[in-house]
Length: 185
Image: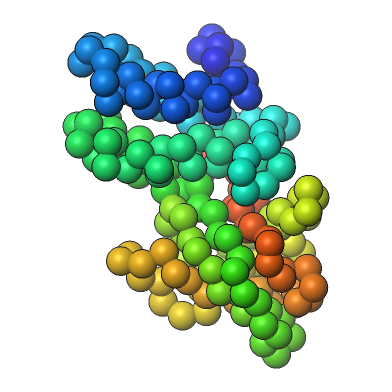
């Protein structure tokens, strides 16, 4: 990361688990510094339109979404790390991810059932489709098919105008605003 220019490099995604281990096991001052570095990395990565990294769930994920995935996996640690950890976790929630587990034709679109990580902001949202190594901005927007539960990651999204073959598993949906560099979540 380069603070002066606000640049985040792909190594930040690799460093995230190490920084989280410092938060968990290190000296409190080192943990506070690690939280600050993670916060800066997530904040600066939102504005990066070009840099993408390979993850276990997709090959070209925006840096901010990849960092958010690491942070969500350590939600308990961050929640117990004071106000800064809780704020970092809340910021990470904006970078939602939807893993399609099943899809069915629904009228002129698709109903996709799967697991939602993060917090879907409600209403209709622009999204990008990750599938078989390709990233496709969806020409349509996605919306919850039924109200989402904060107690379960299970969700169903409605994708009007989409084709079943495009959305069928294994597909991953990510917010397209992360790719556009918009930070107004």
